[in-house]
Image (cartoon, rainbow, N blue to C red; front, side, top):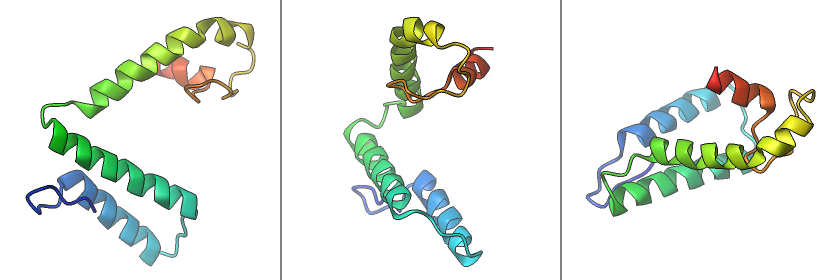
Length: 102
């Protein structure tokens, strides 16, 4: 869970913590690398919130991802038949991009 500068646990991180706890109780095992990824993302989200409470993190991520996808358009058109190919910097397949746009 992420604890803010005032000692309060943020709502989003508390929800993720509860979800992970329930998964563990149910017998699910997470890959250690995935667990570290989740921890890093929660830490980053908490730090960004402390640095700029008005920052809309979802909006920022969408903007950056859209920029990456736009740069990848020529390569995406060349491998269009490879619908599930994820060898792009954004790591999104053509199918995922298509579903998001349409």
